[in-house]
Image: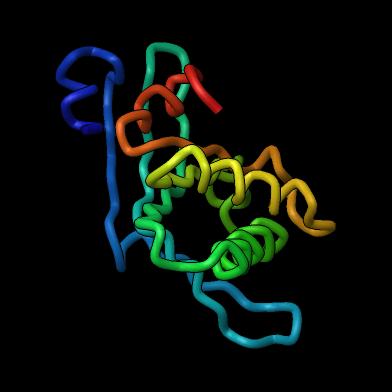
Length: 138
């Protein structure tokens, strides 16, 4: 999908890393070694800027509390500052979910959380990834 978008001229350049190349290792608050395991990491270049994305593909098989636990790992990794030191910014996290009902449930759970930054997360149905990456959807 992202390569097709590049071929159509939506992105000037696309770089994608799948598991396990997309994974990031960091030290937790207790000094333990932790690993962030996104399904994909993507970097997209448009005429004036480069965006970086962690992408999670949910097939509806895990509970919303399990997905919230994954969101908490993203927040812990963001707080480590590693990605920001290496790239200057922290990538946004895109959750690709199978239904609007599931999007609404995860978005509401994140909004109710006291330790997650809702603005860190974006949501899309399977056919909307490129639209989210180009600012067309949230």
